[in-house]
Image (cartoon, rainbow, N blue to C red; front, side, top):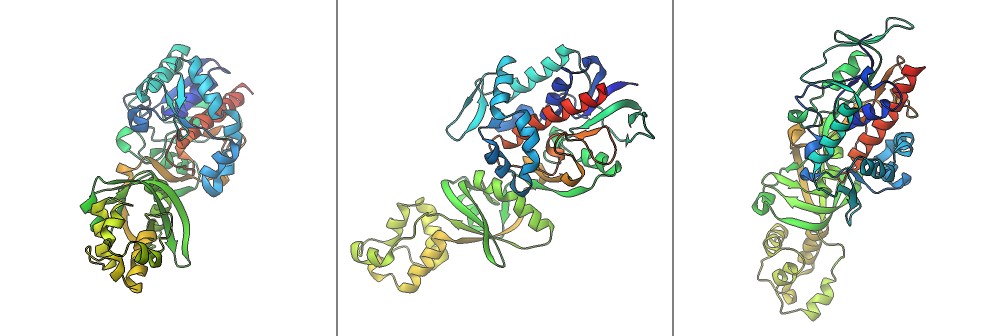
Length: 409
C-alpha cells in the first residue's frame, strides 16, 4: 500500500483536508498529488491577491448563498464555520479581519501568505507531496478489502479535490471531472461562473472602465424578470463585469450552454422619478443635467440617445412618450448577452460531480466506499466575496476527517 489516503489536488480544499486527516492518521501515510509545480497556485491569487478567505455568515445565509442546492453544505459548514476557520488560521499565524461587506481577509492582505502557511504546516506535519503529477487513472477497489488505484499508486481511500475548470493555468483544468466520470459519477455540465459577460450591444464599450456603485440586474425569461442581483457593476470593452454581474454570470452561462437567449435588464435607479412633477418644478432644466446628477454624465448622454431624447431637451418640453422611454431605460435598460469570458476569465465553475451521488454528511461518494469529494469539484458555486473559499475549507475539513476515519476503521 503506497498510502493510507491519497488526496488529488493541493488547493485550499486539498490542503485543509490533508491537515485535518493528519490529526487522525499518521501524516506520512497521506500523499497529496497535484499537476502543478507548487501547492495552492489559485489560492495564492484569490481576492485580487489580498486573500478573501471567507465571508461572515450564519447557517441560513450560507445555504442561501449557494442557491437551491445550498442545504447540501450544511454538515460541512457546521464542521467548520467562518468563525471556526478564523480561529484555526489565527492559531497557525494568520490573524484576519472583516471588512464592511462581511468579507474576511488576512491582516497581511496577502493570499500568498495564506497558501505558504498552509503548505508549510502540511509539510511540517510530515504529509507527503508529489507535484507535476497529472493523475490519469482512478480505479475503484476490485473487491472488499482491496485498495483504490491512482495511476501506479494504491491507497485505502482517495479524496478528490482537483477543483473545477476555471483558470486552467492555475491548476483547475477539469481533469478532476474526468477522473470522477471514470469512476462512474455523473458530471453536471461545467460552465464558467464569476465571469464577465459579453453583450450584443456595442455601447457599453464606449464606457469601458466606468464603474457604478449600485445597480440591480434582472435576468429575464419568457415569463418576465425572474432573478435579480444587486451590487457594483463595471463596463468593459466587451460588455459588463463587476460583483453584481459576476454573481449572476453562472446562471447566464448555464442558459447560454442550453442554447437559450439571455436578456438582462439593468436598473440604474432604485426609485421611479415623477416626471409630471418635474415638468412643473424643473421645467427649464435640461433632462441631461438632471440625469447627470444621478448617473455619470457620459452614461447619461448614452441613455438619452438610446431613449431617443435630445440632450438639450428641457422638462417643460418632455412628452409623455419620452417620459416613458426614459423611465424604461433608467429602470429596465435592456442588454442581450452574446457570451462570457469563458473559463479562462472565470473565478469559479458552475457544475461538477452530481450532489445526488455524494453523501452530504461525510462527502463520501455513494458508488463505492473510500472515495471522497471536497471543494469546487462538486456541483456547488456561490457568489463572489469569499463564499467559495469557505466551502473549499469546510468541505475539506469534513471530507478529510471522514476519509481518515474510514482509513482507521
